[in-house]
Image (cartoon, rainbow, N blue to C red; front, side, top):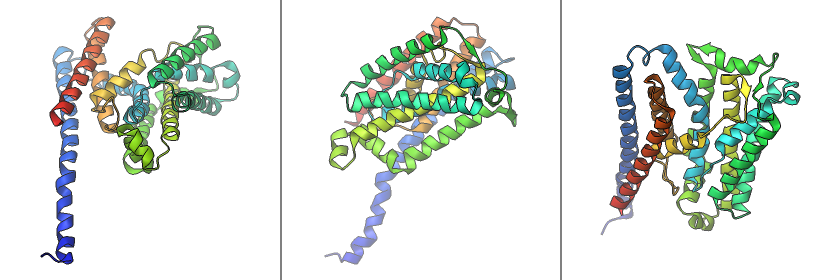
Length: 335
């Protein structure tokens, strides 16, 4: 018969056997995404060697990824939490239009930034309240927000592009000012990614997000206020849309109701390719960002090779289908 002292000695030795396979699985998934990125880079070097590897093109890829990437961070939280947000592109457009109205611009760039962030967060809160307390299906609630936000943006701007006025150059400088050859907006994107990773992996909010997405009823029985947490997830997604609106205003020096068209497609696709389950409960920020970079490089390669825009959409659609099928196959093999 073993003594209690022996049991205490043996207990710690069994823990690594449970944790390490999951850690290896995540590393292998991320490694596969890195390999895909490398292969795309090789394709670029072979097909357009004179333009793909140039500094200006690489900076262009990072700048484009920055705007969609901030939205992708918020989308990752929502999907891990068991939801989906179709309104992100339209909410970003609404925030950019609201922030670039003459009335808002008259107060200066800081007010414009605060306005964009508040509009995005407010729209996200409405989504969360409709889903949690209005008991609407996330697909329907966010689809309604997509239509409403795009329509409101068109009405506010009278379908015209609104320019960032003189005196508000601080916003434009986020794109023009470079540190070590990289625009400031890319550093903002990196900070958002870092903050998202910390919140998801090192805080109670992140653990609750996985719990709510994995099994809402079990999370409720464990004492988590599922409805409140869902509202916060969609508010976080809206906050990311507001930040993305500031970045796109910096890149284009405009606010427009056409901004963010099909950004929801790119964000959702990046999250799925990154390994996040559409049913919720599993995923990572790093995987989503790697998926985003894959999509951004593919878009860049299509443009550099002079391929049709419609072909890009077909390719992206096929990639999404393949990614979902691979997820289902992986889940089936485990069960």
